Each structure stands twice: as C-alpha cells, then as structure tokens.
Amino acid sequence: MKYPIGIQSFDRIREDGYVYVDKTALVYDLVTNGKVYFLSRPRRFGKSLLVSTLECYFRGQKELFEGLAIAELEKDWAEYPVFRIDFNGGDYTQPGELENTIESYLQGWEAEYGTDSKDLTTGLRFQSILRRAYQRTGHRAVILVDEYDKPILDVLDTNAYTYNDVGDKILLEDRHRDILKSFYSSFKSADRDLQFVLLTGVTKFSQVSVFSGFNQPNDISMDSRYEALCGITEQELTDNFSASIATLADKEKVTIEEMKDALRRHYDGYHFGTAMTDIYNPFSILNAFDKQEIRDYWFASGTPTYLIRLLNHNNEQINELAGRYYDPAFFVDYKANVERPLPMIYQSGYLTIKDYDREMGEYLLDFPNNEVRKGFLSMIAANYMQTERMDVSSWLSSAVRLLKRGKTDEFRDALTAFLADIPYDSHSSLNGMEMSEKHFQYTFYLLLRLIGVYCRAIHNERRQSRGRVDCILEFDNYIYILEFKMDGTPAEALKQIEERGYAQPYAADKRQVVCIGANFSSATRTVEGWEEIWRDSQS
Image 1 (spheres, rainbow, N blue to C red):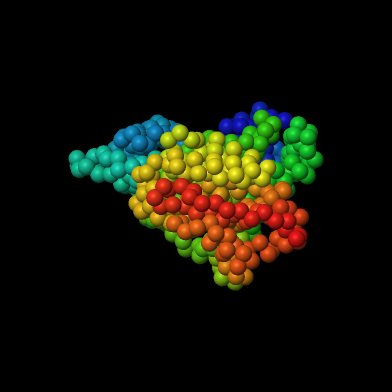
Image 2: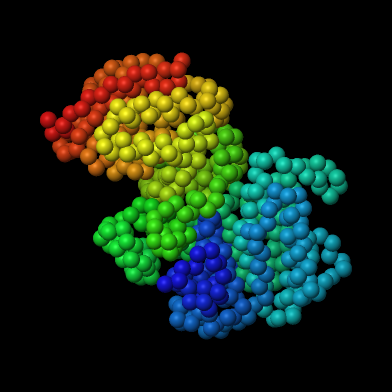
C-alpha cells in the first residue's frame, strides 16, 4: 500500500495509486448546500488535500473521481474558473513577503483574464479579475484559500515592525491584517460573480478584523455534518487500513485489538462537534503505517512557537486550561488574541473536545491523545523549567522506569536532583510568577502529567468524598497516591492521605498501593522531606 506522506494533491494521489480515504460524499454535500465557508482544523490534518479535492472537482476533472462516492452523485461536472490561494509556503516574518505573494497571484490571473488600468488597489484588481472570469467562461468563480491565517500567525506577538504605504512605522502583524482585509473585501462586492468560497486555517482569531470587509462565512469548524471532513474516523481506519494494522501488530508481537488500542491512545481522540465522532490524526497514523512504528510524528513535524509566546504573555497556565468545561463562547466564538490563548490552543489541535454536557451546553477540553499530551507538555516543561544539565525527556524516561518497578527511593533522588537543577530565575520566568507554592504545583503538574502518558491512569487534584488528592498515578503493578506540602512536613502530607481516606477507593484493587507525603522547601527549591507508607490494598 502506498501512503501519501506529504502529498497534498488530490490528482497526484489518484493518478499515482496512493491510498485515498473517500471524503467526496461530504465534499458534494458541502458544495451543494452552501456558498461561503470557513473551516478550522489543526495543521497537517488534511486541509490542503481538501482544497485540492475541491479544485479538481470544480475544474470538472471527472476521471479523477471514478470509483468514489461523488461519481454517483454529480451529473453535470461543469468546469468553473478556480482561484486557489495558498499561504503555506511563505515566510511572512519578512516584510514585503505577503505583498509579493498576493501580487504574484494577481499578475498570473491578469495574464489569463486581462487587466483594468482603473483598478488601483489589491481588492479592486481581484474583484475585476473575478468579474472578467465569469464573463469569459460563463461560470461563476471559485475561490479556495489555504491557511488564510499563516501570514498573521508567523508574526503574532513578535513585535516585528515594518512601514505602511505612507512611511509610518507599524507592527508587521497589523500590516498583514490590513493587507488581507483589503484583499478579502473584494469578496463582498464580487458576490454575484462567485459560485463557491472556502477559507481554511488553524485559527479564527483574526476573523473580525480580517473578514469584516465581506459577509461572514459559514463557520463549519464545529458543524456535526462535517466533523469527518478532514482526518480519519474509526470506521474509515477499519475499512481502509486493516492490512496495515495487521502488519504492524505482527511486527510488535501483539494482537490486532491490542494494536488498535495502541493506535487509538496515541493518534485518536479528536472531536470537532457535538456528535463526538472520533477522528484520528491522518499525518501521524499514515506515518506509523509507512514506517511501521508508533512515534510522535505530528508533534515532531513542527514546533508551535506562537503558543509558547502566548502562554508566556498571560497568567493562564496549561493546568488551568486543560480538563475543564467551557461555554463555546470561550474557545469557539471568541476570537483569540495574545491575552486569551485558549481559542488558539484548541483550534491548533493541542486541546480538543472530550465531552459535551448537553444540559449546560458546555464542552470538556483536554489533550486529544498521548502524542499531543507528551509533546506539548514536554515543550512547556522545557520552556518553563530551563534545566541546565538535565534533559526533560531523558529524565522522564528514567522516572517512568523507576515507578514501574516500584523504585521510589531512586525516583525521589532523581526528582530532588531534577528540581535542584532548575535555575533560580526560572522560578518566576513564566507569567511573572513569584517563587511560591503555585510554582511547585505547576512544576509537579507538568512532570506528573508527563509521567501520566505512560500510566494506566493519572488523576490530578482528584476530588473524593472527603477532599481532593494532589495526584494519583496508576501503573500495572503499583498505585501511587501523592500529597505535596511546601515548607511543611511529609508527615502532615501522609496524615492528610490517611484522614481523608484517599486510598479507600483502591481497597479492593490487587495492585500495591504506595502513599507518599512530600515536602518542598522554598529555601532550597527542591524536595526536603519524603515519607512513604506501603500496604497491600486488600489488607
């Protein structure tokens, strides 16, 4: 089987015999039931392939769709003038790059459809091109914009400057917004010349300012009808990749069901609407089949540096964002900016919907799968802790092995050394936090959530009948119940575990239960005291 790794051209996939998950029934529904759309999906999630599929469809390339669902649905196969704009390739941190990109497109279209000397602005030029295309072909124009937001994401919160047309110094971010607004304003005036418009991107943070020049597109990012428009569903995985799953299972010496579970934990878990359809990350799972190994392909393919900038810019921490219920106004309808990172974190794919409370109309947001959880938390931890000698990933691997084997003394020593290696000034580097109990809580949240990637289960600040335990880590043979104090004593922490019965829910569990009380010193900034109680959970 040929996997289309890095191939985003529908025609090439079909002509060269690569595997294609048939989305054309949804494509047909999209083009016959609306006109102007906006779709937000994480990077490398199939947006460019969707745009290419639409381009081939509107160009009337019927032969490419033989054997697919749309071949039975479409009867006319008319050919429309298609204007595809792809902002993927440019480096928009360079002043003038956006202007040059748009100018290149305009010149190419004017060479095909002619020019009007009266058109002076970018928007007017594009509007005239669309009108002439309709007049010449007898079919309205189709506009497909891929990654509309990249010119702004590249420079978001960088304080990069440039100069506007009258020589005033302005933020490059503002300059890009002005240019795109002028360009997109042509859509409204050209409405009668347009057959179909789709804009894709990662975020909708700039929608108000960039799209204010034309009628708001129909945002289908959380439309239950189109949840599976990008990505791979569980059924599609079974229908298209059963042989691939079997081959990978054979290589890893596990059953097919065990391999499905492993793939599900690592690459599944995305939801884009109230139907809660499970969506796999297509980039990662295709790479896993191609390379015959489960690894972190999506996260390794790019570093979301703009998210680090946003998290450093405000007082919200990832432990305060993940694992909570939200009204959609806070992460869908709200247009993200540097002061409110949640919409961008969600829309970028680092958090996803995990539950929908229909009565309250609220959504639970958390990490979609182990790949994203490990990659994102490792990045945040490295940025926050800035250890001088120890690598977070290396420490994590060692810590997990120790806990799996019940080596709590060695884990304590490794944890003490790791904390001691964090530079003094990093204790207040994130969001200007003072060195306080909150710092230690956040430090341990990051470390324990990372360890939790390799656990059977992890519970942070879990509410029980008589209190809220700091953390519970469940491994195959051990259950660790951890309570932390700052400038207190480990005995106080253990007393809280005992008095509030944190271990009681595991009384019938066959695994070894280990209660750990730990104290951290604000003076030494590391573990100062550590006591344990080991007991058989059935005793």
